[in-house]
Amino acid sequence: MKTLILTRHAKSDWSQDADDHSRPLNKRGRRAAPLLGQWLQQTGHLPDLVLCSDAKRTRETLALILAEWASWPPVRQRKSLYQASAARILEILRGETTAQTIQVIAHNPGIGALAQALLAERGDHPRFDDYPTGATAVISFQTDDWAKVAEGTGRLVDFTVPAELG
Image (cartoon, rainbow, N blue to C red; front, top):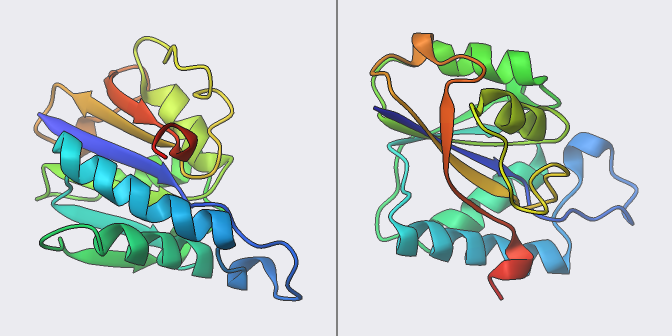
C-alpha cells in the first residue's frame, strides 16, 4: 500500500515586492505550518520522503513542519513542482520507486486538483474543494507501485486545514 500526503504551502505574504517564486510566509503561515507538523506527528502520518517545490513559501512551510518531528525523512526540492499541474505532480510521483509514504508540498491549483482527481469518492470536508493554504490530505492506494497510482484510485484517510488545529 502507498500513502500520499498532499500539503499546500502555508499562507504567504503578498505585501512584499518579491516575485511570486520568492514570496515568504506571512505571520499566519508561520503559525500554521508548525501546527501541521504537530498534526502529522500526532496522527502518525509521517512520510518516508518529502518532495517540495523550490519556492520560498513551500521551503519555509517544510522547515516549520520538520521542526516538529523527532526525525526527518529525505527531502527533494523540485523546481518542477513550482506551479505544477495535477498531471505534472502525478507524473513526478510515478517516477518514485522506494518510498511507501510520500509528502508533496506544492501550490494550488495543482495540489488541490490532484487531491480531488485521485479520490475514488469525493472528500466531504467543507474546505476540501477549495484546498486553502495549509490544507493537507492523506490518501492511500491499494498498490505497491507509484507508477500504478491513477485518478480515481485513492481513498481519503485524513484531511485538515490549519484553522482546525489552533
